[in-house]
Structure formats: C-alpha cells, structure tokens
Length: 170
Image (cartoon, rainbow, N blue to C red):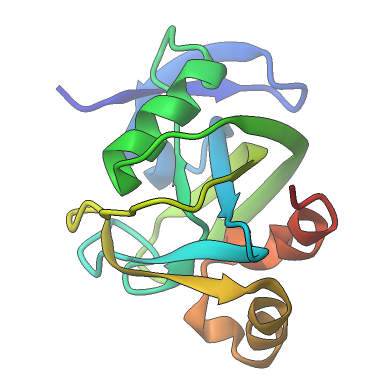
C-alpha cells in the first residue's frame, strides 16, 4: 500500500490523509519537512536527488526532506528519515515553517506546509542511493551564490528556504 501522507489546512491542522502520489497529482496541501545539516566548518550537507524520484530527480537539494506518515509525530519523523536517507543521526531544532506551491512539468504539484529543521554533524555520511545519487558538504556562502546563479540545478524548496536557513544556521 502506498504511504499515506497527512493533509492539512493552512494552519497545519490535519484534515485527512492521502496516498503520496495521489496528493501530488491532486495538488493537495500536505505536511512535509526539510532538514539542513551543517558541519563544524559551517558547510551545509546537500544531496543530488536520485534521477528516478517522482519529481525533481537529479536536482541538488537540502540534506533530507520527506513527509511524516499518518499518525507519526514530525519530531520523530525527522530523525527516522535522516537515518534512512543519510545514515546518521544528530540533534535538530526547528527554525521556521513555510507554505509553498510548485507545479512540475510532469503534472505533479508540491503544495506543502513545510517545517524546516537544522542540525550540526561532522561525522560519516552514507547516502541511500535510492534517495540520493550524490552528496557533498558545501560552503554556505558558495551555495547561496550558486543557487542565485544556477537555480535550475536546485530543488524549488531549497531555493525558497536557503537564505532564511543560513540566517538560522547552528
């Protein structure tokens, strides 16, 4: 059975659930999270999404992003998903929420109430190849410049969030 994601209103109150693909096909507002991990040098860990992802494949994006499952607390989901995607765990804190909507060429739409988290980690990283084709630590200033210069290389939500994330980096 397809993962059920949490549908929400504009105040993040749950209003139902829907299959992940169906929610993106119908452009339904749903709960999601994005994680940005920094190391001791102030670099941010970014990943290039697997080219076979249902949207935004091959684009560079934040360290980890996903949707909490139905009846899963977002504070638990962030740790579960970071471990699944990048094979490490670290302390994280929430820095802001944002509502955004983005339509993709393949007919899918991201319509998210996005919870954004940051953390600090300087150890080993082993990205799950089903999620990330590549990963790298990038100087935060260089990332911001590259996002502005080459936005076509980056996920929509990273572009929307990166300046505010860098203002709140650990």
